[in-house]
Image (cartoon, rainbow, N blue to C red; front, side, top):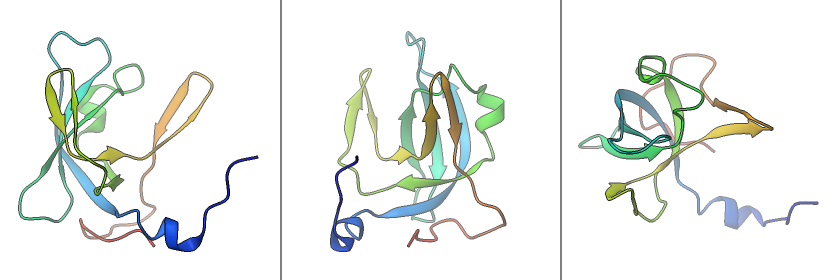
Length: 110
């Protein structure tokens, strides 16, 4: 059984809607994409994600997805990543989460 968290712990997560503006494979990596994601802020975020096994770059561009924006930045494969895309995984399958109708970039998940 997963660890239970208090609602106040969930509220610490800042999850926003973002639209993927660009996506390209990270040179020298077999698994990583470098994405530019508009989360409704002053400038888009660079996010690195290991989606290469499940998506082409063209499939990712334009997707509207939830993004964890207050995750501590991480250096991955020599590049900085400023957030995390939300996806569902089961077995060998990974699917990006998305919205069921249009919503403004930066909308907060509550």
